[in-house]
Length: 313
Ligand SMILES: [Zn+2]
Image 1 (spheres, rainbow, N blue to C red):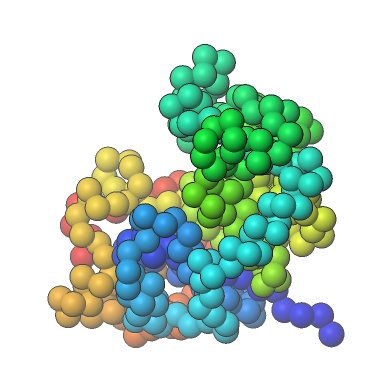
Image 2 (image 1 turned 45 degrees about the vertical axis):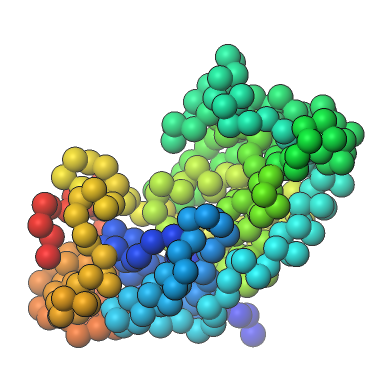
């Protein structure tokens, strides 16, 4: 007997669920419930200072309000640092990772640093081969170093289930050596999700296409950690944007689900709008997310961003 595919809903408790991220979670949930994938709920609460107390509870209430459910979890990334640390130690021992003491400012002002598509400076590799060990780096800097993954020069390709084939011909220059453990001792996003997804047996990742450049980095980590056969299938979705073309956020007004709930807005109204954004027309008044399962078709999802109008609800 083969085990069913597994996906995860992975909200960050750094803010409330709003219409934009609710729609990404809904597509993920609909795909899972259509195809019989197991769903794991994971709270990505590693971003120390930005995590808001109680936000995890609100996110869970919001997802439940829409009628979404899951088969396991919630698990919390903040409880898993030992596993992340073990992975980082292994990568250092293999020569796939090294300590870095550069400040953000130093990286940004490095004359040769090209810029990645997301606008962040590509790390120019200053600390490659610079220190014998993390302890040496600590002594040189007088503080804890970050740990970076050494990106190889070999091209990386993958086929996204929605966005199509992608190739990074020169990952060393396009991505740069990226941080896997921050100098505050916490694992960085790229490493944490790979370790967690592998442990949970995740085979299907559905997320916003703002994260598409994370995918080659995560593929590199799977490979370096000896888990190349666990690399999941990726489905990256166009985001919901405001009338100005920027990602839906606070500046576009309050579209938090908690606000709608508190104001007594019927869930049917919110689901109707989200259904339209999922490419489902004329749904009537859905009572719960389950009413959309039979009507959803990924092939009908537009390949361009969804534009939310000024006053959405
Ligand atoms: Zn450095």
